[in-house]
Image (tube, rainbow, N blue to C red; front, side, top):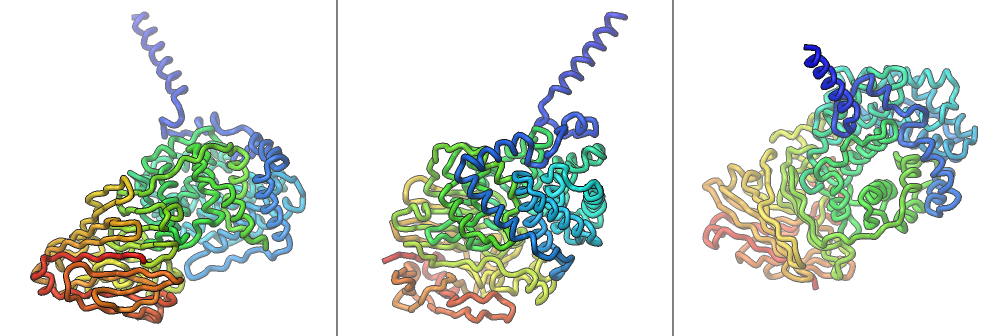
Length: 625
């Protein structure tokens, strides 16, 4: 009996030792005891560390890139010293603009102080924190505002290295608890916890930063918050799978991914582990996705609520620096582009980056590596599938096609399944309207009107959101089915004649029995788009459309486009007999629609009878001259 008991105790002891030695990345059971044991013992611990600061200070003296970036932050910090403090002033239902200014101010000042130790920067951080922490709240009804503010306040406390007055440190911790953490635990405000979009990433990133700050004082609360994040952030990260294509587009890739990188960096600095977050399928490959999304025009394929610019902007270069370090591929980090972005960025008191000290850390760690070339073409499958043909500016003809499937009901979605943008010779010929100001639209059609994705939503009255403002098919002059999902059905991406296809049938439920759209690069300067249709009794007509800003002239069998001294022909190859129109969309149909200079819609209109007699197939060729 004693032997059995001894064996049992030894077994338990071995199991306990095994559990204690189990790598952190393999468990998400975070307890107060674990926090106390694993939390970095001295500050700073939120992305910046003592070791990191020593490395940064050395690099500022020895590395020209680090010196240049630090000089940029330093000039911004000086220009911030005389500004009036921020006001708690909402734009509509958002405090988000104030939160982002707070991050820009506090992050810049605190990062510069952590390197220089100049008291004037510490004093200004103190003033900013006292002001923000005295706000009545950080607007928890729109929790993105809280998430971002919590991050800004947290780095302000951490990056000042314990040198703020005790009264300020006490106020800041209390504010983080009362204005960020406690609201995050309320069902009234925490609907973001389990969503699968950027709100999850941003809000968990801010609250995790706050949790690390209060972990010394309340390890149980910190453990609860970190556990919640680790359990739920996979919901947002799963949309990167399988290939890295972020469903909300380039702008929201930058937004959501930036806060995931903040979360990863904060966990590593505070606890020595990234909890395997970067191993989420598709996450690392999303850097390839965003690189491939840039056309020879220098513009993004700006589907959904994304902007077309920013590919060479500073924040994008900062994000890609992290991926270059992680992958060891310097194709992601172009030092010349980074320095050019720094040079272009304003030094008038507003540094748009949310990274600041994080970038100093990543730059100081960066070691020049081989730049491994990217593939010419790209497939991004998943909940919002897309393809890219061509290597942007690297393609001798500047050939670039971005085409997509997906569904209008996705977060930030448009009725754009089957749509495409097309660049040739550095010119964008087929355009996507992209992002429109949310505040103005909420005033015009209401919050629910803008953000509801139901079939009868007012969102679909907008040219930038409905299928009438996209380069895709329209049947019977009706809207797409908002919940209809268009999957990618094949992709042949090898070589210089890629092909891909999407099944649009669900998008036209009740209008067609079936629809498939194929894209094929047929030459160095040519693209063929083929629509194979199955008409139904409800089908009256089908319109093939392309949005453009080029000068347009109707010719026999198609339209001749001219732009910047170049020519593109958009020709109907099958069937003959379509009605051809060029319809101006400047001004747009509604007063509150997006206004785009020279915008027009090329229309090839096919009556159902014509299509039935000619094989129910539409073939259109785009060809440069």
